[in-house]
Amino acid sequence: MKDLLKKIDYNNIPDHVAIIMDGNGRWAEKRGKLRTFGHEKAVHSIIDSLNACKKLKIPYITLYVFSSENWNRPKKEVDNLMYLFHNYFKDYLKEVHKKDFRIFVIGDICKLLESIQEELIFYMNKTKNNKSATLILAISYGAREEILQATKAIAKKIDKGKFQLQDVNENFFKSHLYTKDLPDVDLIIRTGGEKRISNFLLWQSAYAELYFTDILWPDFRKKDFLEAIINYQKRKRRFGNINSH
Ligand code: IPE
Ligand code: IPE
Ligand code: MG
Image 1 (cartoon, rainbow, N blue to C red):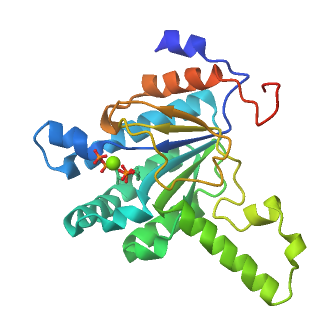
Image 2 (image 1 turned 180 degrees about the vertical axis):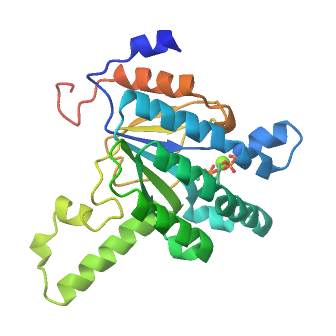
């Protein structure tokens, strides 16, 4: 771990890292267990990643917890996940608060159990003045849904005569997204071997670097997070220009 920390360039820390935490089900099935066992084991990897963020002073981290498409999974799996969210958020969001992280939630949370919604809102309020970093939980989140609701909100304002079509530029559009106050994503990490985005932060990751690893999420540790950052720091980001940043 110390060797990895030595390789980190503290002048090139990403502002915003987003993680697609994939592979829980396969991790459990490989051990002859129920998929839900894999979801339970996800917590350790989350805490490790948050600790790494704190150590490196990464200001924003987004975790893809549950997608808008995950609602289509068999009822039993969805129920299990809701049960886990209900049980785990109480204890672990308290831990996150102790780390001085601000908690912010993106997604259509109205679909979640009321008790889960209340817990999330409670912690968003309780942690709103925390300064170490911002943890964004993408839960019941879909990027297409986010873009659609922004488009509808803008159309409504234009319809009411509050704005003109020519007012709609990138900044204006961004100000209608769930992530309006957050910086663009610099790095997306996806565990579990699949090389896709699965409807995650489509607008915000227009120029994100992508890092894919075969490690299944429950096996992902602090050292794996550091390796992703070291890999990111070797990239040449050009943003369409010819000089790298
Ligand atoms: C990610 O793990 C967690 C959620 C999507 C909620 P999966 O449940 O997708 O696990 P795999 O990809 O089937 O192994
Ligand atoms: C993406 O994983 C969603 C989360 C990690 C919450 P999925 O397992 O749902 O993605 P697909 O179905 O493999 O694209
Ligand atoms: Mg999956």
